[in-house]
Amino acid sequence: MSSKRCYYEVLSVEKTVDEEGLKKAYRTLAMKYHPDRNPGDSEADAKFKEAAEAFDVLRDPQKRARYDRYGHAGLDGMPSHQFQDADSVMDLFAELFGGAFGGGGGGGRRRGGRRRGNDLQVVFEIDLVDAFRGVERSLKIPRQQSCEECKGTGAKPGTHPAPCRRCNGQGAVVQGSGFFRIQQTCPTCRGRGEVISDPCRKCSGQGVVQVERELSVRVPAGIDENVQVRVTGEGEAGEAGSPPGDLYYQVRIRQHPIFAREGNDLHCEVPITFSQAALGGARGADAGGQVRQRHAGARHAGRRRDPPERPRHAARPRGAER
Image (cartoon, rainbow, N blue to C red):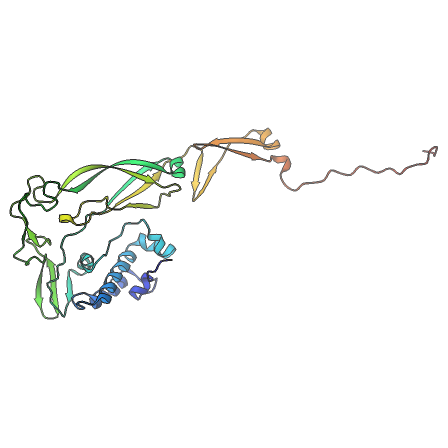
């Protein structure tokens, strides 16, 4: 059983809440538990991440529908943000509210920083038999990979990036004064907090190169088309040594000439002769392994009736008249 709290309970909203209501509830909690208002408060930091996770699920119609039906277990295998720390929440917060926040403490918190790599998604087809038994598939995936020459730093080997002077290495600049301030990504370093004066020639200072990776994935037996399977760490490379993203794959099951799938059941229509329908018999269907089914026939259909009784004749004494 999941130890996570109900997402509706986290945001203090009803299940019928609309999109605007969700945004309002999340903004209230994000402002209340923002790390700049609660420096050193681990409980507030946890609630800040919890609210972001709940809002990220409920604002997505597909995720919300699965969560409403199956709870937290319904989200397994679906793409989701990884809110591992307070910094990872800042992108979602800035996306919705433009980076606006109030703060009682110093506003030099780095918002952008080095971010994990992007997640990738791939869809491919398999046969119904492969979905039934499970199969191993080889995929060729174009993705960004960390540059081997500069080790992902973007700087020429033997040199190092220098702290950005405009944001003092924070990756963000703050405008405004008093209670209400606007924090924005530093336009000079683009949120990295560093600038590269002598870029790597192989990756042109990007720290990543485009490659095509061949990857073998195992499709589990009984997989359904609506399920996404995550392969951890096989997404695109993160910035300057940050963790890579994940790969999500989804299958499409080809139509079988005989069998049709309905949930976990297989259905088929098999033609039979009149005599088989009347007398019964066995018929096979090949689905990667022969299946035989015996049917009773029409003579056994319905309620069984006993044969009529023979008339009984009374015994007569020998020599009696007929």
